[in-house]
Length: 59
Image (cartoon, rainbow, N blue to C red; front, side, top):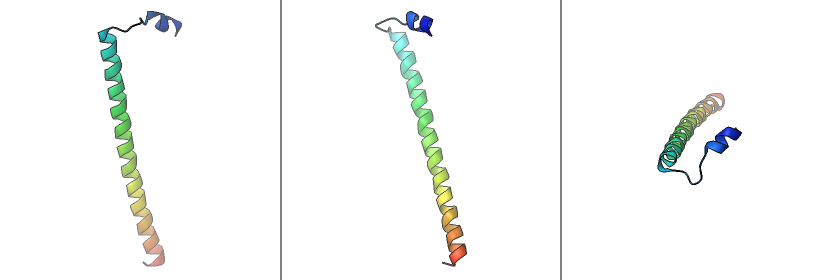
């Protein structure tokens, strides 16, 4: 880890900035996909709970 910090130059050159920006864009896209997937799961669970509730209480 120390050698990694030693290799980093301050200020960063353009290629390092491009790599950092592309990695952050990919990470944000993956997080957005995970949030959208989770919202689909929650929506499906809500529908199942409503179906079970109406089946149990006849309403």
